[in-house]
Length: 274
Image (cartoon, rainbow, N blue to C red; front, side, top):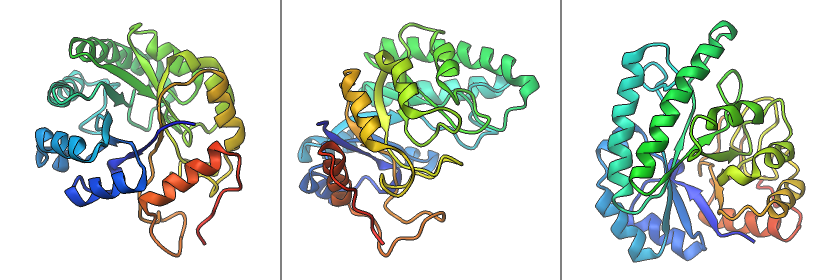
């Protein structure tokens, strides 16, 4: 069984929410915030809440939107440099409070086939620099697999992207692969996976549903991670509100994630909220 984590993409970093996280049994969070939230958030206050409620700051998701302002694969040097400047500030500020994993998207989208090779090259150049920056601050950069036309939409491309620097690692998102089986992805990159984004989908597009609401074979996925000695945490990247693509009778609670993880870890039937 793994420790349970949750992305902060669906809630605010308040005293009340940290207390609820602790009470529910969630051990860690990934900090994921908009640029506006970032500007209005004091890392030292977040660190204090983390220590007060014993909720680890497991990772930090570097921003990737809007694509016309943040895209490390952009063919425009100025845009790449702006992204690097922003990432440098974020890594320095959050590594200073103990965050040691920074999640990075290798591109925005859409990507035209005729530009793909050049954008892979630009992304790899930037990932090399980000890996070195993170390492200087005692951290690692983890490249996330992405859907659709984005770079890194299969294990081969992720493998090529992280070859830019041997310090690079992988964040495996379980609802992004549209043309490759999740278990195959794990088998090919298991030794590089340091963290997860857990959610379900219909394999037509990303959905960020709760496991059991889509088509992922969770028994096979969990078994594969265990068999390949994945040693990170089981971190959900799902908002509490019902998405437009799926209606629930109520919002999710922090406790729902703990129950869901227990069901997966113990091979139980997955509870689905009507």
